[in-house]
Amino acid sequence: MGPLDPEEPLRIAFAVQQMGLQHVVITSVCRDDLLDYGADCFVRTIQSVRLKNPKTTIEVLVPDFCGNRQSIKALIASEPDVIGHNIETVPRLYKKIRPQALYERSLSLLCKVYDSGTGIPLKSGLMLGLGEKKEEVLRTLEDLLRTGCSILTMGQYLQPTKKHIPVEEFIRPEAFAQWEKKAMEMGFAKVLCGPFVRSSYKAGALFTKVAAPLYSSTQSYPA
Image 1 (cartoon, one colour):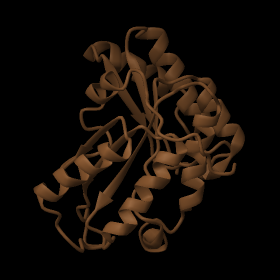
Image 2 (cartoon, rainbow, N blue to C red; image 1 turned 30 degrees about the vertical axis):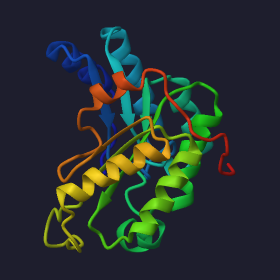
Image 3 (tube, rainbow, N blue to C red; image 1 turned 90 degrees about the vertical axis):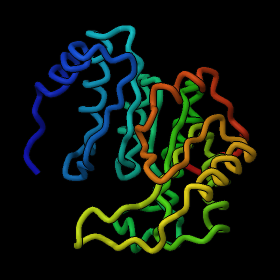
Image 4 (tube, rainbow, N blue to C red; image 1 turned 180 degrees about the horizontal axis):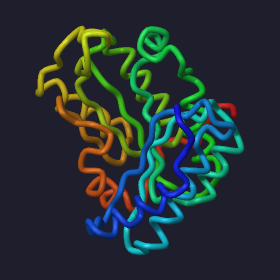
């Protein structure tokens, strides 16, 4: 990948201003090629957006920063209004679906945010239809709850190109409705499930409804 554009944070801030956004989701591709894994760019973008748009709430959807403590600390210190990191799938499928990621490392990132004591709401998401089993999804939701995650999205995996892993199953809308009900019963503060739901779907509305985030457990994963 090419070098980062130092003007990008300011350009994003101006774009938010021009569009009059009340809630913005900031995300990126993984930048494992950088020493800080892209954390500083996230921080500077948050700062720029907040300076130009003080009334706009800011949500970030971040990679795992390869578990780097300093990168995660820098992100937390920038105090976005929501920190999102998608678990994506169940642990059994990680080698197939997310070969460069680690399930426990993703859980650990969420735990570090919760354990920081900042009260920043945590958000995560899963894609269904990859061959996961119901009991595996339930265990993954339990793991997310134990990290302090309070906002959840679940959507249908769709094959982007022929080079990507094919869809194993198309989940029916009524099954997504059942997952939404189940996740709420388990203790998530807000859940959106549906075939076309993605991480940023109705993100502003979700944040508004979780203004006082609820955490169902104080148990944390080891750092």
